[in-house]
Image (cartoon, rainbow, N blue to C red; front, side, top):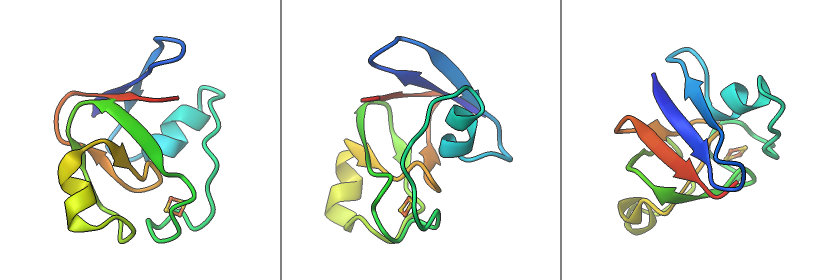
Length: 87
Ligand code: FES
């Protein structure tokens, strides 16, 4: 598990191993717009302000992934203990 923190509210939520970031946020009433939920369409693209992403999508280029400043929360996860999201 890891934590995601929302920059707007400062609220921090745990993302368990069996849930995506989108699902974990949804469980707390935070909606992220999604479409494919497979890391293909880019609909859920979210800015990352802090932390390292474990990218599992097919949407971002390798160059974009290396910057760790955006990710696809329908499938991608965190490498470290915390991601701060621009939500
Ligand atoms: Fe399509 Fe996340 S919903 S990439």
